[in-house]
Image 1 (cartoon, one colour):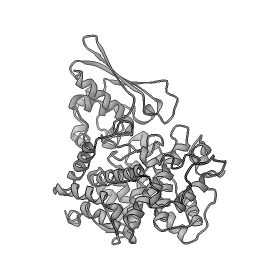
Image 2 (image 1 turned 90 degrees about the vertical axis):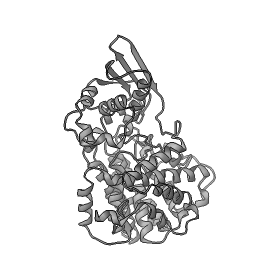
Image 3 (image 1 turned 30 degrees about the vertical axis):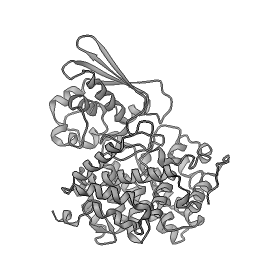
Image 4 (image 1 turned 180 degrees about the vertical axis):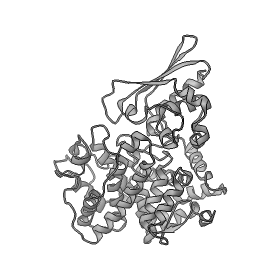
Length: 465
């Protein structure tokens, strides 16, 4: 059993503590809040992953992945195609992130479910695993990924969802296989050998971002395979001279996060995304919607200015332009802010080629500007202030102190269910699938075979269309 209370961390202890977490934690150790959160965000990840079947470049990505080998034990979300586990992990992770609709840990600045879930699901389809074991593995995998993200205290240098995701995925698979401490440590070492993820793709708005999540999920499976084979791996994978934190983060504090492991469980800190765009756009979207409710419109607006933390500028302050693709637009606050103000919502349909090239929206986006506020925290998404200067000389202002979907401002159960239904409706005509999926996730702690979880959201007939 895991000890009942945290103790003060010492230098170099992070890997030991995370290894102990993976080996010593039982399902019964998960507090009710952690269990509920794991089920909640598993449901969200699966629904978003199904909708990802409609994402740009999906046909090319699938064709590429199938070239690595046909037939296998694991299924791709939506299609239900049976492929090798590593292929399923790659494609399903790509689908979970390609619409920028996947849940996020704001403090870690990482989509910590989007590599962990696909890797764990692929493993479950390779060997019989009960629902409790799957939920435990997911909670631990998220803990590993989030803790590594929280250890950083400098701006993003690499694409953190992919870099920390590879470690979380590897450990989750190790938990599913019942690895001992030595094997879990090898999981970390072999994951280090495969870590990658460039922010240049984010800078340019390229589809490389979801591909990097796919690579991280696949790397998790490969790392676990190498660990199980007994192949030696770097022992000091996290804090070594050339370990993860030294190589991928310019500043980090492993000691401070070591004593915080599972206090609280990081899965309880995840945020839903209510809009299919970069999380850094969500404060501005919410503010634009509130200004719209106060009577601000495209016809009476002279200019709009967002006052936001440095992270927001790094991630989503970029000009909207004719011919931009969906990947770029989802990370462009002027575009999604204009959509929110003009349409009163931001949905999946706003990233079609037709919507992206609508002259009125592009013209409105040019009226959106941004300035940096005094926030010093490199991981801060808030506070944000959106100010509208109107043509009659008035100025209307809205301040956002927490993002919709965060633990401090959560989606209601009805909003969560509506998101699930919307995502599944993008692929399936049968509206009962959403209810069946929600029931399967609720019943997962009693399930003797976790593979049944995918039955409501896979349909091989779709692959023939």
